[in-house]
Amino acid sequence: MPFFALRNTPRHYLLPQLKLAIPNPYPPLHISIIRSYASQQGATKMTSKIEEAKQSAARKAVEDHFDPNFSYVGIGSGTTIIYVIEAIKERSSNPQIQFVPTGYQSRQAIVDAGLKPIAFDSLPNDVLLDVAFDGADEVDEDLNCIKGGGACLFQEKLVAERARKFVCVADYRKDQPRLLTTWPTIPIEIAPLSAPVVLSALRALGSPSPTIRSNKQAKAGPLKTDQDFFIVDAPFPPLLLPQDVTGSGDGTKFGEGGEGKWEVGSLAKRIKEITGVLDVGIFWGVDGAQALKEGRGKGGQRPVAVYFGLQDGRVKLRTVETGLEGRILD
Ligand SMILES: O=C[C@H](O)[C@H](O)[C@H](O)COP(=O)(O)O
Image (cartoon, rainbow, N blue to C red; front, side, top):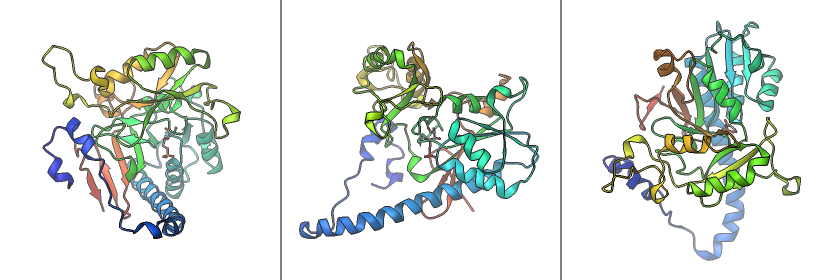
């Protein structure tokens, strides 16, 4: 079904319809041969398409939001941010710029690129970062993000909130109408001792099977974050936006967990309230531009702009103004 045909459909009805069935064009006998060849070829092609998409989005984001005269720049974590650093290096050799990392990997990447790192807690009190760049695991229509797929979220949130603007860079897979459309779980950083309490609180909120993330080798036990904490991955049904939420006939507010349905902000708040939770991998609320306008003296968790690298090499920019459709950049 073409997307434009769905545009007037209320979003919470639309989500299940996006799971399209793809017919198999090959007869059964040929399937295994084709599969092994295609999976090798396909995986390589797919990976390079994704990497190209990340790189072109990073280039555009840096072109639009980085100025070599900046003093402080936040650098997120993950695979996409490496292309951001690369693009910054191409544009600037100003040794005065200080780069604020969001964890171990991020700091290493800054140092490896020959840039100057400064720890978050060494920043002068009155300083706001000129910009913070970071990736995301999924971004919804209102630019709320899921982050923490690579186990970094707490420091990323600190840095995003300390920046005048958070600019997000991602590939086409992350561009979705609602959070938890294709990304399956909400990453949550917790104190190890609180694990049983947090898991049962999450079940009570409607998450069917929250799990503690393991290291790649399961025998190495739970994965530890940069804070030496655990990550819990909690599945929930796709998250609603405020515009999806309507009062139901019996006076209960839709989006507060009834029938397992949650609105983004309501769920983020409820999870954050659980004792033992350091932070939640939902970046929501005001963005940097709104926060500064309201005189909050700090930035916001939500990006002011998201650059998505597309499969065809172009880049799509989404802001609150462009809506889900976004704007294709030249
Ligand atoms: O935990 C990791 C961070 O939140 C990343 O920014 C996020 O997972 C996106 O990572 P990538 O750029 O590798 O897709």
